[in-house]
Image 1: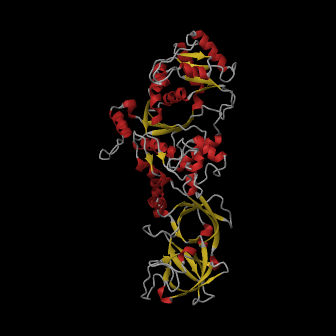
Image 2: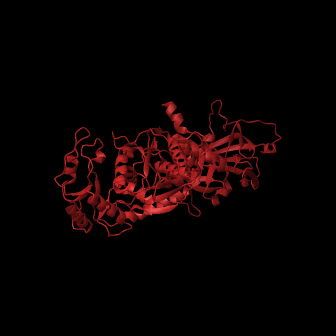
Image 3: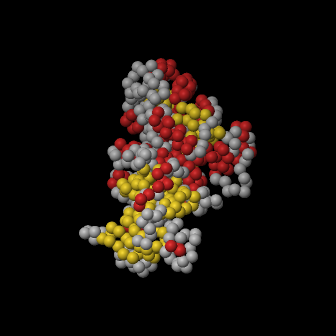
Length: 557
């Protein structure tokens, strides 16, 4: 079915709708997502996943998952499994699971066919010599002395390459196209190189491996991919993509390009991400400060928030930089509707309500999520004479418009009573260790008959009922907008405040049985349970603050 005409279409949707109207490929839509299994997927891949799977769903099509496993040195089954997990977590299912290595025999036969047509030859030149002879964008290339080899000699040498008769780098197979082409990719590109390395799927069967440009388009054609959607850097590769398909006379897959996702305060280069992992700047690929999908999942991002983000940034033909605050906005929007509210005191000081009975415990009730239509249920909250409150909620000498606690000031305790600060205690280091207050029995939330109105409300946790947890406060990994610029080492821009660990915060007892879901710690931000949690030792990660604190800091600067 063609999408709603009233909706504004992006350029890819316009192409698909025209193809469907023209009954091209019988009106079929088959896309693919072709990651190389040499690292974990990141937020940029999420955009490609949402695009390829989403556009196929919209037009009653299908999407293949194909692993571009043509470089055995950098690839691993660990990455294969993580990629599959990420795609499923984002909410998508692939029609077929393929590997470029599935087609190694067919690709070899394709290469032989091109040799037989006089369109490919074996070159003994070194990598440096090949690069020199290619010329420059303004000067044509020069033919290698091996370019004139006969078809018979090329067939023999290529078979010997496959048989393992030569060392790595000793020979390559090149397409014979146009050494004067203004497109450098058309100047006799390399199709196969020798690489004696164990492959994660084919083992030691092969010692020659196809280059990306030779494997990609032909794999698309083998699978009858109708719309091969790539990022803009592959525009110069498109003529070569079309040339191979034309000369091999195979299914005419077509390549289309869109702008990749560039996010500020972030690096998405796999090489740089691997450096961060290997050099210990982060704890692993799923460190919650990383831009990988597994890291975002561990930090508490939801599939819906990432799909919403990808939808909001749209599909364009021009490169631009997206503000990471938009991603943070999307997760706030989602968690505000779904996260359960709980109270947690991260920097505690004791509050004693002197006129509340010492042996009394009340059970109060709080909504799980007041933003939900039905409130999403309630939980029980124990209340007692001694409470933990945030140290920042008390000031010995409060300024005007400080609507929290200070000598003589009144405030409401969330879900509970209005209290008045009467006194406080300090230790020998001039640190406040205890705040003393009285409560107004008639001011109970939901039953308030006191007639007293206060402007401030603070959260708390009952001392005898509190549970402890480690809180990990995550922030942006880099302190500058463009850490990936080549002017300096990107690792110099790592934000020293990107992780702050609070080893013993106090939390509501209800959180002792926390599930793998989002929580809003009232007034503190959105949090999620970390995989490091163990019985009796809970660990929570901050997903995002309640407000965009970076925007405030930028304005100050």
